[in-house]
Length: 164
Image 1 (cartoon, rainbow, N blue to C red):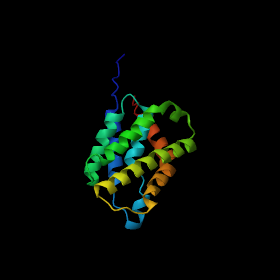
Image 2 (cartoon, helix red, strand yellow; image 1 turned 60 degrees about the horizontal axis):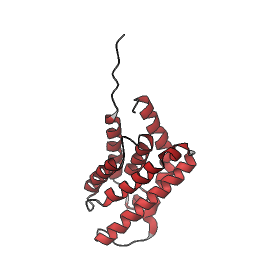
Image 3 (spheres, one colour; image 1 turned 180 degrees about the vertical axis):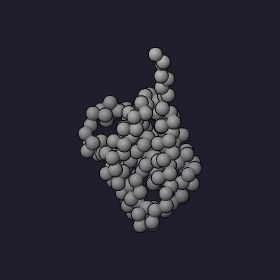
Image 4 (cartoon, rainbow, N blue to C red; image 1 turned 90 degrees about the horizontal axis):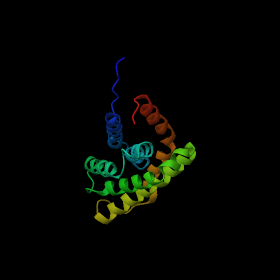
């Protein structure tokens, strides 16, 4: 009887982040930019919730720096927001798992709203963007609406590839 070696699934996590980065930089029409879902933070929330001992604050910092480079923003701007999102998610990951999908969507809305407020505030302070209306927060709303489908997709992928 041969012993089957199982990979630890790091490549699945990295590939999911890679796809989230691609979706984060896909061009949108100008009118739809405020409605762009926050793909990288949503993927981060999922992996921190599912595997908090493998994906955590350090991963969030690295993911944020890569996102800063891709978006051409001030280095560390997205990283700070993602670290806060990862910290809160890891703090409540056991409760988060027990929530219904609507409750999870509400929590995702709050987490991404905080992330977007912090990012916008830091962009205004650094002079990267001018102060504007509150439409930038709509990305958190679209992300919350998409969360149940993304959660189910990533869960099926994690279980299918036995990522532990």
